[in-house]
Amino acid sequence: MPRQRLPWCAPLALLCLAGMASAEPARPHLSSQQCEFTTSYDLRIADDGVWLARDSGLPREVHIHDGGISIDQRSQRVSDEDARRLRRMEAMTRDLVPAVANIAREAVNIAFDALGGVVEIMTGSQSKARDIERVRRQAMAQIDASLGKGRWDQKQFDETFEANVERAAEDMAGTLTRSVLWAAFTGRAEEIDQRAEKMEKDLDARMDSRSRKLEAQAQSLCDQVTALHDMQQQLDLRYQGQPLQLLVPKPAEAQDEDSARVAAAAK
Image (cartoon, rainbow, N blue to C red; front, side, top):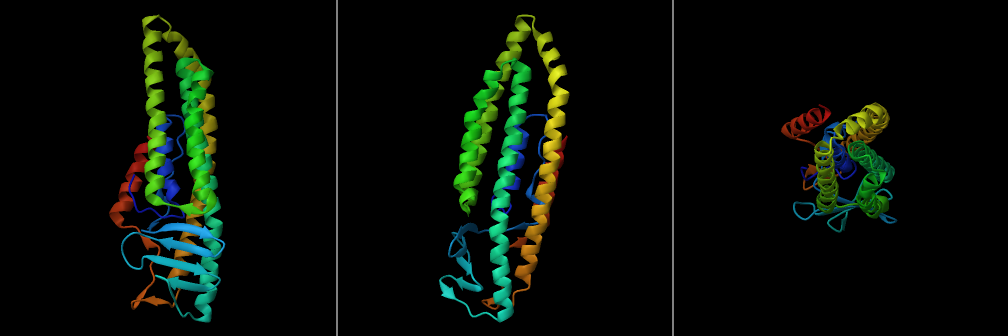
């Protein structure tokens, strides 16, 4: 998945991968194209404010707390109106992060529930479907240790999350292949067809309902991200003579790539 995603809604892009790993049943089609902004900053929320930091580019660090702002460890003078805006930006960010964490957890559950349903259809074994629970727990632990604690490290989350989901999909692909081949060789392929006919519609319906609710929540979250960007644009504060740009609109080509990815996933 592309780097440099918006910390406040970056899991939406990553969790599209989780949906794709779940095979056909009702994938949650979540993508950062629903939020048309990006950033190069990692995010940390603490008792003493909101911290944004990155490895390269200027400014390297921005700290917002209680109507004040520090840029690269230098406190900035702000107007009363900007102090009000900064307080609002801090509050909005504090609200957004737990909301993102909840969406991330539900997207993981949808993806792994769907994957488990496919495994049960193909193998007839609930115990094999439970094999994916270990990886689900790892994905949940990662969310709890990062977003759940008010931290978003783009690189670490991208790489680890993607690896966990891909590993689960690859492991289950091997299980499914062996089960299908065994059924074919032993003349039991009809059993798979019967199980699929019995379970598939119900599984699709349940996953589709959950996915649609999650997509609506994601879009609502994007509306909040848009409001946060609008508040940023109202700041009178200038950095090196220019407006402070923590969130920026995504390039048109990046939005097109995300839209194409979501459209392909929906097929």
